[in-house]
Amino acid sequence: MSADSLEALAARWGPRYRWYLLMSVMVGTMASIMSSTIVNVAIPDMSRAFALGQERAQWVSSGFMVAMTVSMLTTPWLLARYGYRHVYAGSMLLLLAGGVAGGFAQDFNLVLAARVAEGLAAGVVQPIPAIIILRGFERGEQGRASGIFGMGVVLAPAIGPSIGGVLVDLFGWRSIFFMVVPFCLASLWLGRRFVPGAAPGGAPGQRGAALDWRGLLLAGAGTLCLLNGLVSLHRSVTEGLPLLGAAVAALFGFIAWERRMLRLGQHPLMDLRLFRHRAFAMGSVVAFIYGTALFGSTYLLPVFMQLGLGLSPSYVGSILLPAGLMLAVVIALVGRLADRLPTRLLVGIGLALLALAFALTATVPPAHPIALLVAWTVVGRIGLGFILPSLNLGAMRPLEAALVPQGSSTINFLRMVGGAAGVSLCGIVLEWRLAVHGQALQGGDGPQRLAAFQESFGMLSGLCLLALVAAWQMRDRPRDSALARE
Image (spheres, rainbow, N blue to C red):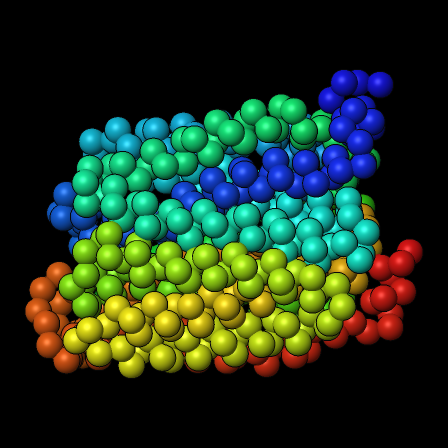
């Protein structure tokens, strides 16, 4: 028996080994989530340093999202081919290298390259915890495990913007790239101790299978065409529509190719049998819309506070800190509820609170806004606390055991496609409304400029209400439950 095998590590560390394993991947996921969100507080300073327009500056976020989104689909294949320990360590090393390179970069193109490298690493890591929770824990423990994992993970984006805002004020935008370094080093040490070569959720029988490169290229091309089409559509309809048409064509091509792979008995990048389960199909719709609203808001909120209300980066971080701490508490409590209450109810409550928070943020006045901003961001984070430990469980519990790795990568992929589109969509809508009101993002003031931000938050509120309709359909059919027990 190998020293890094699952059996050897479980025998060495005893009954609580599965919790140690979850803690190890939690640290790596914290690093990947921090790298995805913390850069937003530095976008205004970075824009000034490189003399960037709004459209180019937002690719600091959306470029990361594209890379993370596409690489998520490779996680099941990588785990089956190289094992959990090697995949996890390689991802953390790539994330570490991206953070260091971005901090030292003297050219904006190098900054973008570093962000893409970070995104590739983050995408591979993020589906792993859900696989471990659903395959390594009993059903009565899954909600608790999701809550504890979620509580740890949300502390990174809760504390990160606060520290990042202070660092930007004191040392400039470069300092925020280095914040992932200690997390990456800790995750490498923990991974060497606790992450096995094979872990719960592995996909035996696929070790010799080739990666579905055609599916990966179609998914990547479709995602890039979607994002570029959204950006180009704002400049010119004749320029944007062909790109959006190409994104739709890539989607249909991807579906046709994945179906062909299944018919031939090969291993597709995305197993379309997942969508035979209504709970998973509806959960995927929720994940896409929810990702659009959530990641769009992570871009829009710091820009609104700094350029709409004139607050400094350190103020932005201070405003987000209480909400992040509240999210950590709520997510742990809701995780326990997810073992006893219908997950669609918890997801629905969360989406309703998130829609309310966006609508209330749109009413924040420019005079003395801090108390109201803190209150409404707390409401929104309470909503997230209901969604985060419940959505994956509700969507993936009906799946057959062999489909869980595919289900985790697919639902994360759809959430991140929505997130990448959301960052672009918020930038487009904001510039559109600013133009309608005769304002510019880097200049001007007055109620017209504030109205553009308010209307953008109204759009996010409407998206959450739309997701609420799909969330209420996340009910297992008897056929789904029977399949899951096989």
